[in-house]
Image 1 (tube, rainbow, N blue to C red):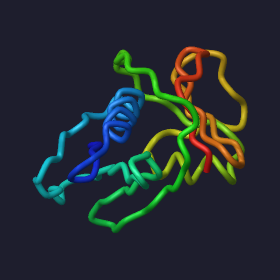
Image 2 (tube, rainbow, N blue to C red):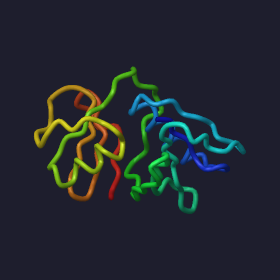
Image 3 (cartoon, one colour):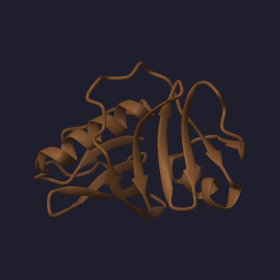
Length: 137
């Protein structure tokens, strides 16, 4: 899976895309005017009035969307490569795990590791116990 932005992204959308790619240990592709290649899956950061507002997952199977409001500013530091896992109540967390093509750990929040914690109205991105950023869904 690759992560990119729209053709002419705002600086906030680019920063968010890079932070999310770093958290998910995915390659970030600076799209420019190139078209998306139909091999594999792509996550495209969608924006509204210059602010990141959603993700579109494109693959051969079709297109899925996840709308959100970014809460806080993502950390600019690159993270070490580590594949996150998803945790939270199954009704909320399983669709997010499937969207990001990640493993679901269950309903308990692990003490260590890189975790995407899914609650009814938010998704929190946690690395080694420290929250990196939160999405309101």
